[in-house]
Image 1 (tube, rainbow, N blue to C red):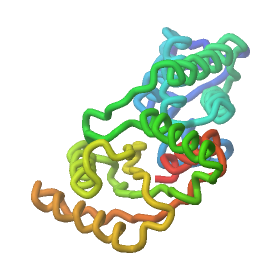
Image 2: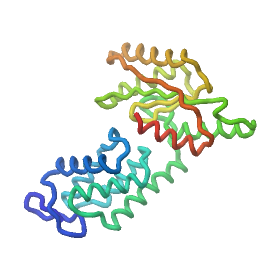
Image 3: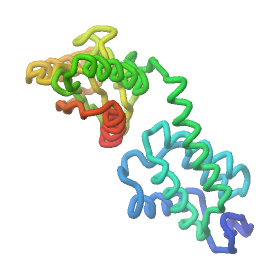
Image 4: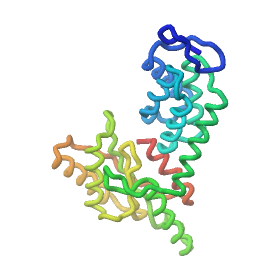
Length: 260
């Protein structure tokens, strides 16, 4: 428990003295997590963080809030170990320790979300108009399958053009729409490409697309942004070789999103 405005709230197995506000608890949680277990500080915050902090403070709905945050972490490409360790940091910030029940809820929520991805992959991102990560994963499965049947490595034929249009102030939906419109103008509707989130986009290209492709992408994004009255975006582009296996490319996509 900890004292919140004169009330004892149960957050762990032993009575503890905790923060006096949700904002203070959230900030202590963030500091501990980013200093010890969290890999990419830019993607730590999610609205589910606030919901779980408030549940901890009020002592109501903790399991449900923890499960929802685990769901969001899985969707964001955060591993199960990092997700569980982060919950531990929350309880450390509050002066307690997570119960076995809470850890089970977090783990099962994360696993259920990943399993749902596997059987019901989303296809279309409504903001950018591009494919989702899950859609691109399915398209890349075809690429690896065709390469194997041809007795060649997928990376000998194809690569991923990575476009990083992230902003220090966060990602505005209008900016996401601009990049989607620009990429469809360059590559055409139906081309294997996707938004990964965090301002990161990937396009399947030839193994060596040459500098002209990157230049055209950057110029088109800038032009479309200006036509919509948006401060000119300055996206960074690079070519990422395809790894040896489809399983490895799934990991690569998660890493690219979190690096944005």
